[in-house]
Every structure is written in C-alpha cells, then in structure tokens.
Image (cartoon, rainbow, N blue to C red; front, side, top):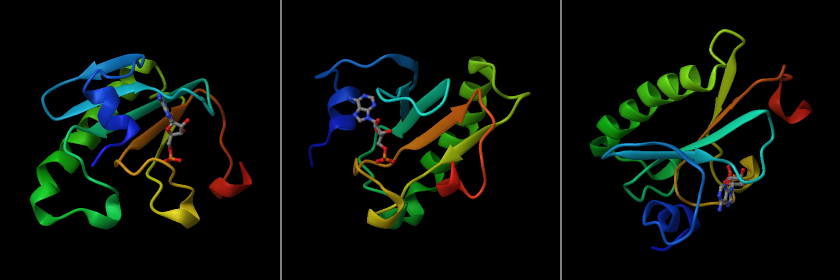
Length: 115
Ligand code: AMP
C-alpha cells in the first residue's frame, strides 16, 4: 500500500532525515508544531497502532529506544518532550503509516487537545 511516508523511506520524495537504520527512519515534520518535531516511522508498512500484531513487538520496542536517542540528539531530554501516536480519525491521524511524533523545545499543555 502506498503512502507518503513509504515514499520518503524509498527516497521517492525528499525529507529532512535525522536518523536511519535497518528498521526505522526519522525525519523532521514538514509542518512543525514545536521547535523540535520529528517523525519516527518503522520501515515496515504498519498502518497504525490499531493494526499492530504480536510479531511487531521487536520493531515497536526498537522505535521507543530510538525515540529516546533522537530526543537526546535533538537536545530536548532535559527540558522534556512528548511522544504522540495518533490512531484513526478521532485522534487526527492523517498519514496511515505508523509514526511517532517526537515533540519538544516548548512547554506543552495537558490534556493535549488544550495545547
Ligand atoms: P498525523 O496527523 O499523526 O497522521 O501526522 C502526520 C504528520 O505528517 C503531520 O504532522 C504532517 O505535518 C506530517 N507530514 C505530512 N507530510 C509530510 C512530509 N512530506 N514530510 C514530513 N512530514 C510530513
């Protein structure tokens, strides 16, 4: 199934890539909502958290370990950051290839819909 993040992984469209390994790719969000806004995606075409399978355990764990490293690299660990995984329509998911938003560099509100 084709989607814009698969096209970025395949280098069919450009992105500002900040990290890559055999299981995942991280690149800057084109419409940043915070000073640091990076998207971390598995290379495997997983549609969303709603479709993950037990066999995806390794890649999901890998993504969280890499999110930690990417946040450190981006300099937001001490100040704090937020990982967001939008899932289906009510959350606002717009790209149906699993992705973790890594957001930092500003004070964020809670709950998230209050900004
Ligand atoms: P979501 O709404 O959780 O599905 O998030 C999709 C995110 O992808 C949004 O924050 C968009 O700004 C971002 N986005 C869409 N197209 C691109 C692109 N070509 N390069 C980087 N980020 C993108």
